[in-house]
Image 1 (cartoon, rainbow, N blue to C red):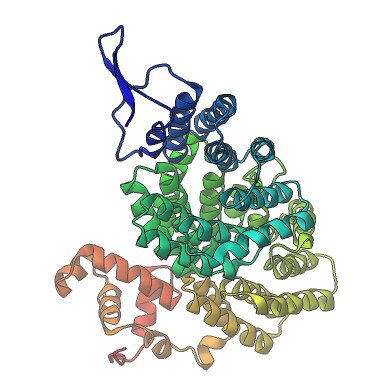
Image 2 (image 1 turned 90 degrees about the horizontal axis):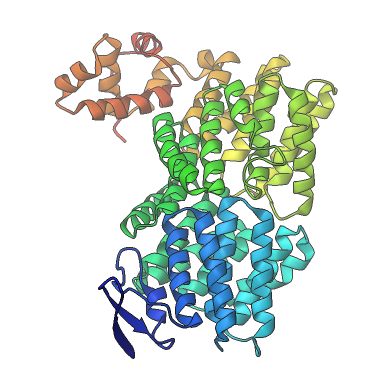
Length: 534
């Protein structure tokens, strides 16, 4: 390493690097810091120092600070006339990532424009730089809502996914996600993760897991998203990337909101929001707030869900890329809360989003939203046609969750129209869909709706319902039904109180009951026998 040692005025020793070795600064990570003080030197040295500082802040600090350091690094690289454009490109694209995380669309566009300027000055543009150019051109066109112009560059990025490089595969997975090809994004993400693990790259693994868990959540593959977000959280915490950790916590809260685990939603969302507010992570904040609202909606608290989502669906609220995804949730909550007029302008905005064609789930969700809004003023045929159209369009969904939500709303509409036989068929499909994707709170709603049609008396009797429990769950249920506390049940069965708490939550979800009194009544009416072991 070519360097000189210099004693500074304060008596400390500084190691002064040449441009040739200053790359070591950018390679220093939060968990393996480079213990070097850099004296004022060339623009190239200062540029690399700012790049290292900006990348650290992007992972573990206010993203506004990261953005400022990264743009300064790009400016210093330009002034130093370094022949290789890749460090400057790394800086400006990371600055765009910071602006994206902050939900600042104009600033993100400006950073992408700066990246394009760097590439324009570089000749020839080939290899990694050509792939980066396609990525930024596609992303820039998307942010300007020029979707036709985005497709070509992003498909070229996707085509590079044939390589085995973890960074190339990660970028291909991101391109597929931007194109709305969610299943492809999941496949590419899994390959990128395997490649990152093979090279021992925790930094790339943390980023890859962030995008993979998000894509799987979009696909309705909530169990997989939970597993990958949990792994990503551990990698991010191990490598000191609190911002990435907060994003993973927001995804964990969203998966828990599907499963009906309100305690997990509250814990993960609170931790995600704490970091998001401190570091200006608007995307993470929006996802965490969405998780809290969806948990409320899953518990039948539509008014609370609508109140939480109202700020996020405004044109100036929430993260610009997440806002369209939570619009159907707000429309459903608002209509069920008797606030249909507040939902109508949001439905119009969502219709514009669905028209772009890059969100393949949007068409089915839009039909469902229109059916909800039509219940107040349109004829029954119109409402029914919209629900049936939504269910048909859901056939293209990867997961069961969104389709089951539509079936639950349609089944409840049929029930209120005094068409119980048709309602039962639709609600059974909804129940089975929720059970397949582990959406316990929503399955509770479907069971309650089925009971309201008379299903409990004709095939869902207490014995049949209790037979869905494991032998251990049934023993706990019978102890609780006697009036025993969780601590008393734990002592009787020689298990921990936490184990009883966990099983009792699952029992409530499986039986569709909300209190110990309801559980006692259900157990009292059932025959005294053990279910078959599973």
